[in-house]
Length: 170
Image (tube, rainbow, N blue to C red; front, side, top):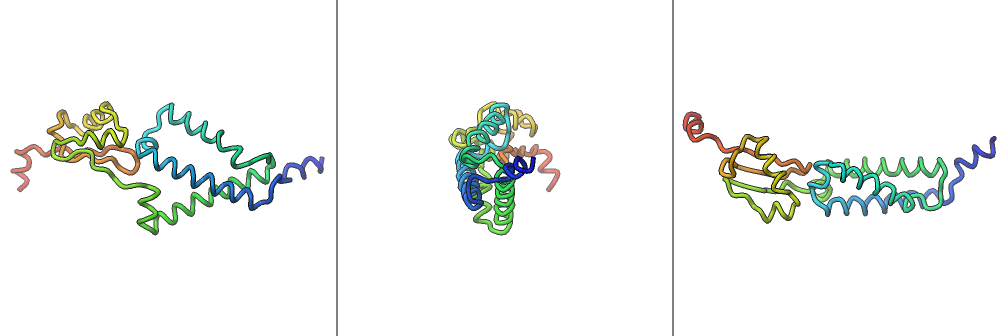
């Protein structure tokens, strides 16, 4: 029994190889996710969830190699959690890192003018934009004062004020 217990923690590679693999996979996946745009991470559909599960399976061998030990798995988990914490810390302290990791909000429309080329570039469907309009109470494109694709992938729409309301507010 003690031989089996010892085998559970016997790693097939040196500890630093796990850390190096975890760092490489983490940063390459982070870059790939950033390149795919905000909408990919902003609204999870069943297809997105499937992608996450398949990505996890796809990178498993890149992380573990031939190792199946508990120690190797725990070391990888600790490395990935630490990397995630460090990226969060750096993002909070450096606007440049935050912009690279999180991206920046993107203007989609202003004063009734919808930037269709931006919608296309950001992979926002007409249906998604119209849904955001309905949620903001905009029945027509002319009702839009401002539309922004946030870092989270959410579309924020600000409706124009009713001219009568604006006159009363001044």
